[in-house]
Amino acid sequence: MNTKLIYSGIADVQTECLVAIVLDHNTDSSKEANPDHKVASNDKALADAVADVLASGDITGKSLETNLLHSPKGLKAKRLLIVGGGKAQKFSADDIRKIAGTAARFVKGKNLKSLAIAVPDATSVSAANAVRAIVEGVFVGDFDPNYYQSDRKDQRIDDLAIVAAANAEKKALDSALELGRVIGESQNFTRDLVNEPGNKMTPAILGQRAKKMSDEVGLKCEVFSTEKLHELKMGSFWSVSQGSAEPPALIVMTYEPKVVKNGGPVIGLVGKGVTFDTGGISIKPADGMEKMKYDMAGGAAMIGAMRAIALLKPNVKVIGIVCAAENMPSGTAQKPGDVQFAMNGKAIEIINTDAEGRLVLADGLCYARQLGCTHLVDAATLTGACVVALGYVNAGIFANNEDMYSRFSKAQQEAGEKFWRLPLDDEYREMIKSGIADIVNSGGRWGGAVTAAKFLQEFVDDKPWIHLDIAGVAWMEENKPWIAKGPSGIAVRSLVEFVKGW
Ligand code: BES
Ligand code: MN
Ligand code: ZN
Image 1 (cartoon, rainbow, N blue to C red):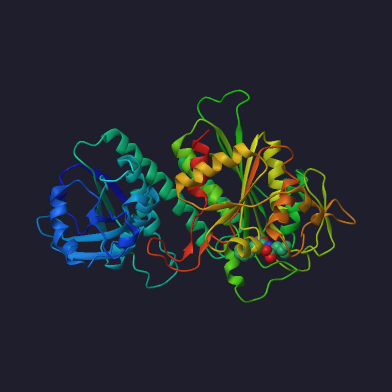
Image 2 (cartoon, helix red, strand yellow):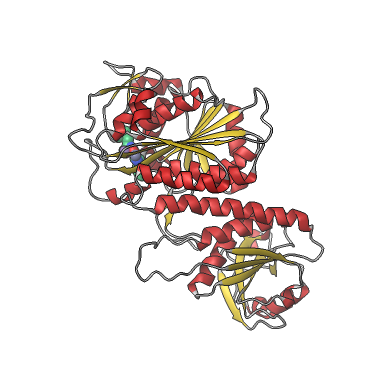
């Protein structure tokens, strides 16, 4: 997608479809039925063009409501798409991102290939933040998961123009556009990986995709397999792969800033890359098992984040580690009752072979520390229990360190992604005690998201750490106006924002 900024008056913008945002300025909640709509722009011609339709009462101004005008009065644009932005008082960059995604999906639905979006300059969101949100939103909206349909129409958007005020700070808007593009493309890169079915996304293929991307953006990337797992004594990670004909992949991506501060932080991003999770010998029911192709979404998020990091060049060293394996039942698969040794020597009694994500991450977290990471973040589609707790709205976040938590919390808000904190009290540790080994890999039914996190905590030592359980939000269960059903690319934006903050 070509993206550009234009600074002419809106009246002169020639486009298939111009997009404008309408906000409700009525602050009196008792007069709900009497909205006070204004277009979120200081451009006189745009205000004139929408005056009649606003006066007609056709527009409710509800968030993400769309209305289309053809040959709008006084504008050179062929169409004017008016998108509702909700209450002016609460309007944020996140609304802009969703509006831009909605506009992109609307335009694609009409088989158009280009659009122009007017920067909402009559709001409290800065023009630069608005530009970034528009670009991110359009990239998100442009993604379609119907990759393998033989009649797939190539409905991608070719051109996005963003119309800013003539007196805008051009430099700031240029870099906001570039930032939005890098992040939007990286989020879609992650979604592409997650979208692939298990037969087209094996651990080895995930490694190849990470390597190819790394070469393109100038990241160091090494991909190891079974031998290296043995060499590093990653018995926990290896045990998940042992039942599969597909060898595991240990993907290590390293970003070094130009100036490395001695003793400065090294951030480790560790992702679960289970390319298909049958459950293993503790096999899952057939119903819905096809969805377990997205069990590598945490790893894919780390790969997408590393892509963005390589392009944005923040001043901190970051190591991305993805532990990729396929969890299969077979004659060589691990069995309930087996005991495995993780890299740090801890003995794990396997209670349920379907609790495999924590097994691959255990060694990934140890390895990150061995490579010198001082701060750890992991992301995983780890537990169904997290979905039971938080549904499809919030991902779970766990933290053993308040500074890490507040940094991430700030980043997620900035990025417009939702995470809700869950506890790590010591009492939960009791639930993963083993009679034969140090710990069990399944703490049973109750508090399953927490006991999984407690398991991971055994492998982070005293390092500041946050754990993201994205099981419920890595896959959109239905189409939304701003994003298609399918892989969401959750965590990429927050992770990039988090790293940029150091
Ligand atoms: N990959 C699943 C978790 C999952 C569930 C992801 C739903 C996405 C949607 C994970 O490997 C798993 O199977 N977890 C088990 C753990 C249990 C056996 C302790 C679970 O949550 O049921
Ligand atoms: Mn599982
Ligand atoms: Zn899994």
